[in-house]
Image (cartoon, rainbow, N blue to C red; front, side):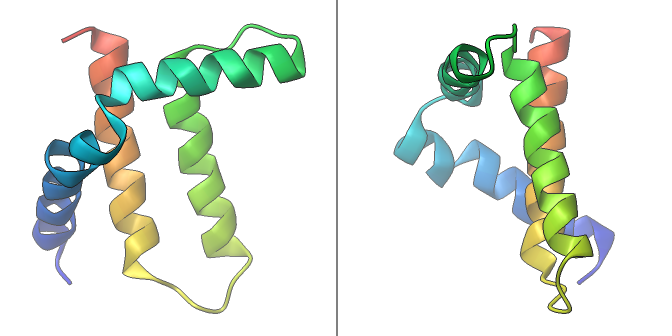
Length: 89
């Protein structure tokens, strides 16, 4: 799979079905941030959720002999969502 195909697939996921399933990323990430912040007793924002989900996917890549393109697609998608949240568009 080429880098363009990875980005195209990530775009399709974050701009299509996921919105229908889970709502807008900024809203969903804000809910996750509130739960994590409460659990950890420390402030966490929606942007942090995107960064930590990227780290989660990286950990999966490191800890597994199975190198799924899905993890790379998900990383690209989380990066796009996190960037949009950070910039505020």
